[in-house]
Image: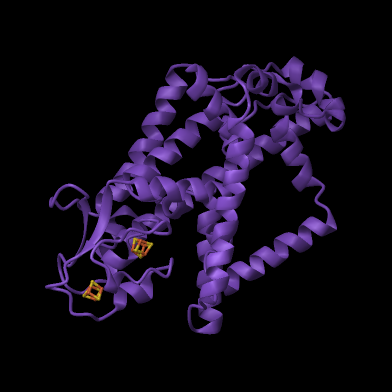
Length: 336
Ligand code: SF4
Ligand code: SF4
């Protein structure tokens, strides 16, 4: 497979490979978590299956609160430490190359991209949201982020600690599992509408609703590494603008400064004139090879994860006895 990718020489093939690996990783985590839940549901009568720490990646509220707690105290809270570790690595990769987490690693980003590819195949073109609707809808995720920022940053350290220590936070992953295992008709309708909208409008979820996406967008804007267009060698073929999944008019810009650029590298891959689209640090004229986007997401993910594992900050500190104790009462729990 690697030989085939090298032969074709396209970064998009590597991106797809990395996306597939992370989707498979999530399927593995999901299966592991299913068996862990079975152990709890049978009151410990089935074989013990340890909880996969990677499930913490799907707990955005707990991870964000854990990040604020970390920034305030310097301490890693051990209820869902992998959530904090993963959030830091996702933020870092989105800072190094704008929003690269979204188009290289995020499983929702991958799903959204494939749904949009299917939509493009069906409709024969990319359907763009009317400009005014696009502006209004894009502001939704920032409003949601602002609301969360006001609520979370206003929490004092003891209140934060109280929440993170509590049973509600301890089993928020199990409650999330319950939600999907016993999904309501209303939720199925909502998910179906979101899927349909993602088929019609490219990146509907990521562009308009994902609150994590809003944070990644901000990290992307802050990134020192930007795509630049050499207007002297550019032949104005417009291919870069047409291929951009984020509807950025690359062909009209000197530097891509956009909250929606996700470093997918499609524009660099398609540009027919060598060295016309390049990645350069803001304060330098030195070109960074586009392959470094792929290398950086993998290196950041693996190095931060291994450091966390080796330093004992990956697995949580909750015993199976504590889980078995709280599990039967999980629906009565309220956050404090
Ligand atoms: S095509 Fe280029 S400008 Fe558009 S999102 Fe991808 S990397 Fe950014
Ligand atoms: S694809 Fe390259 S040559 Fe064509 S418009 Fe974009 S930057 Fe210019």
